[in-house]
Length: 257
Image (tube, rainbow, N blue to C red; front, side, top):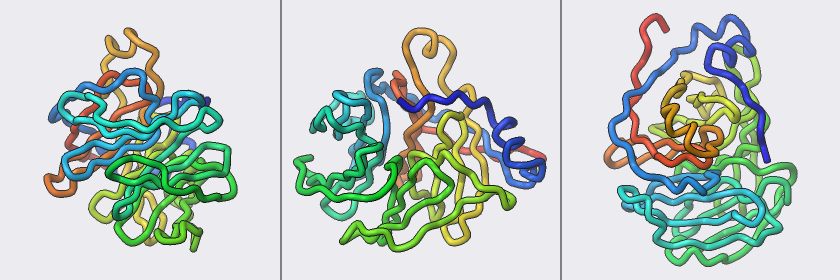
């Protein structure tokens, strides 16, 4: 299991260099709170046609599922063989593409039925996935984001993610949001806003304190991970691994940044 506690935004910025202060920092306002399966080790998340799609990890507990946003009820689920540690997912057309962590194997599911249609392979680790309708973006825990052909799922190029010239690694679950890639920085409460053309971080989202201490103390919650965007209503959703809640948030730029 991936565990490496890294503190709040200030530490992340310090690691990347003092010049990071030039990058805007965003806080949040919680607009709505929804129930989330506290047993779901969230690896991938996206919203489409009124349904929240989620992938979960851990060997023997990995799955792809459809969930009702308001109730948190699992509407449909396909379990992944216990040999695999499930990772991120994204949708392309009528398919859902999913990754595994260290098995070098990905899956393609039917978006309607969640039945597995085929497998594919890739080198290295698989972490997060997102798409902009024409390209698939894949993270692997490094500062590189792979760009995949949506038809062949072959890698065509890579985007090197930097902040003030310094590489930003541990990029995990991702989402395409109004022309930017949002990526969880694993082990932190931070989401990086990435310009896909240049790979530069154009904003930091600090979500420290999003999940209240009572909820953290009541269960075995893990790190922030899971970003979904409703492009029609411009709603941004976030959650974490084993979190009992999913949040709709609005970003607020902090003064002085």
